[in-house]
Length: 308
Image 1 (cartoon, rainbow, N blue to C red):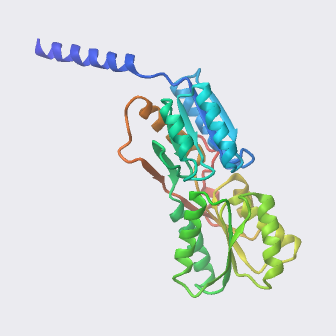
Image 2 (image 1 turned 60 degrees about the vertical axis):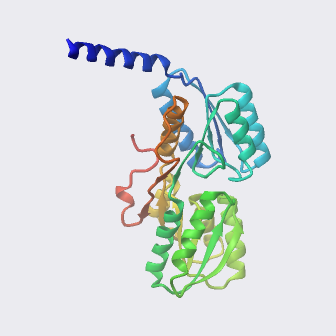
Image 3 (image 1 turned 90 degrees about the horizontal axis):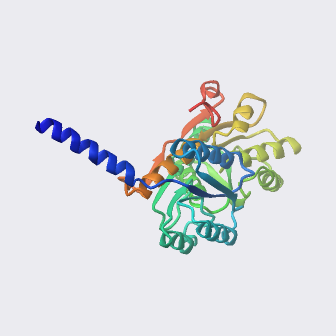
């Protein structure tokens, strides 16, 4: 009898819990640039996870283009639309705080993705310090801890800052010299091309290049081809489809610390939905481990578009 009562009680509790679960009706997503394949993959990850939770959930994905004021407007639009969860790739990790607070005051869960955002309910990102470390350790190993390198920087969001700091930490333990580290290529192929053209004009010899993301690296490789330079190797961060092709072909790009934007976005929405229903994560910062993709192991790499 007691067993039957316990089972009945458990069933009732489960039914009540299910009945009280908040429905995920709409999600607002504001990302760095939808021209970057990284953020396209992230959007697809959100769409797939949202479909699992609620096939009818509405997704509003917009490109902030690293513009803080534009992102403020986007978040205010999400609030006006009454979204349940915002996935935020902050244009500025600290200055975004007032917008985060406005959203939370409206009962919206805010989860930061890829970069930190002050005041967010949770953050899901790659361990970007480690990504910078392993990409630049590759340079150290290939160059024997000697030589002149350049770091092609990007927008000063937390992920980029962490990658550069990780790289500098590794380089700082060697006899290698950093010729330049303050040039912002905007995280784009065009920016990488322009910045690298300037660096190649400025420096007659370079041994290694660390680009903060794959589009930047591809632009840097193109600049080298245009100016007939081939004395250096390039590493980066992302593990994007374009870098897979670059690693399999005749380019100066030798390695990339891979991320998984598809899974990152799925994890962020899953956590956001849990928070919406009163289940906070044990740790508000969730770090995903990067893996170094090289010419030697790229054939075994399961990239952003691999089946999940």
